[in-house]
Image (cartoon, rainbow, N blue to C red; front, side):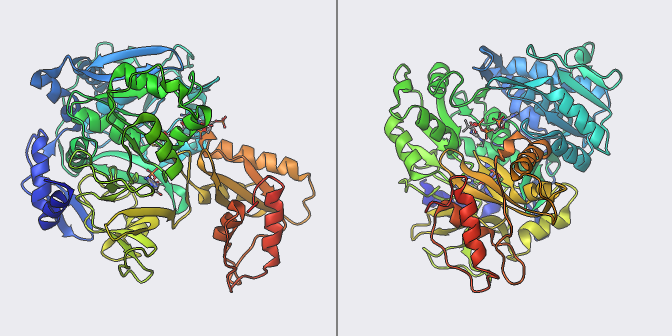
Length: 630
Ligand code: COA
Ligand code: AMP
């Protein structure tokens, strides 16, 4: 069957389609039905099944006689270390850590925060939680102690598993002081912490609370897999959007297993045993779905890469890893390819490597600009496939399913809706618009298996954020259009989310931080175009009356404050002091127009603007830091 037939097959009977896909999962008790729709517009999948995620990702491959197959390759150009872990070894490691967690009281439904860099133990920790039915929440290492504290308070973890440090080029990021600071700040205190001591940094452990990763496992009986119901939360992953408070996206166990397993062959075109590499971080959804769960559930070899596209040691790192480990499918963010292109425009660093093993390069996480796609295509002489998805969905909404049929690529489009997603472009009244017309991108309910059924502890916020604007649809927060052939074009966000180097950030959260500066009366943060990172945040602050300190000092403090409160990952480096912000007469800040001014794009002055002269003031201010050139 080609793509059109598979999509039509799904559309004709979604429940049959997903029940068939569910046959690839090893159930303790198979689901008797696919969709639970009695609480529409809230939907769940495979609720009456009993299953264990870790069993499907690890044990079943050992049982099937594939215990010697490599499950994880760790390749760390930062430390120079490499290691391989077979499925049988992974099973022993995961059962060992799960045993220790269980002995310390972690049981089904308990939350465990994981704050770890790109080491295999991060996956071991995730899988150990899954083995017990505990709900993990991985927090990206580039977030600050305050952001970690917010997550601790929201999910109230019984335990936190962390490493002593992460490694950024030229810098050891000590995690323990961040962790201690976060626990200090949080109201909800974990019962205990487990710390993986790395060679580069030995953390001081707090007696009675902190346990060494190895010591805590001594004498612990390895734990077996605990069956959970299909709708049990597999994990919580916090993401940005709408307000400063992160949203705890809940991933349902059974749907996650079924959907991810289905994507490995159909979307990524890999067979069990092949090497799949997502160069992302376990702290992001790409890391959850395609460093950890997807490849392992499907019996692939996954790569945990601790490095950067450039500088570790050079722009040939990606090509070295692909050739050395025989990577069949490679997934990264367009930013990473832009970084390589900037450093090595002629592709000289590719020359020493044979990458004939690679079939496809997949890009996602942000808009893939045509230049980057064309450059990569020409250099690699392989298909470069853009696909569009979100933390909320956990897998592709629109893509080019090379495992079903490689559709013609239209550069600038992540291609077509995947089975499971009825994607519509809606006008403000919620009516579908004609092809080629811009609108809000929405997905007709129900969303497919694996997508979020709710937000952690925030059902109302879930309904309000996603299900209310367009009744009967899930609001993606993206705007764009569909062409005559059903190809989607993702153009912009409709909320405050910006995408910086493939990292999803909230300008609202940054505004909350700036507003906390004692000299700031009012502020706005926008995302401006950046040739490398796609977007960069730019902040504008108006000072409280009577403040006459040097602006440079205030700017420096603002930059420092965002780094401290949100983290280095916010990459907040551009800030300006201005007298006034452009607003409508009703007081709404015209952020969209500010973005257009910064990017030198034409715009129409809104009729409702309060004082058009402010736009010139803003343009002049931006020009002082090299923007708004037009
Ligand atoms: N722990 C601690 N700090 C981190 C971190 C982590 N895990 N990840 C990033 N940071 C820090 C960086 O060190 C940097 O700090 P600095 O301001 O002191 O330099 C800051 O956060 C910003 O990082 P980043 O946006 O990654 O910028 P960069 O200049 O270090 O690197 C790229 C630029 C393009 C090489 C890098 O962003 C990249 O590899 N992007 C690909 C992103 C990706 O794979 N995203 C996953 C979604 S699929
Ligand atoms: P995240 O939840 O971090 O994966 O970010 C999801 C958001 O990133 C989407 O809502 C889009 O705004 C953007 N995004 C992800 N993939 C793409 C893509 N292929 N093209 C355009 N935007 C994308």
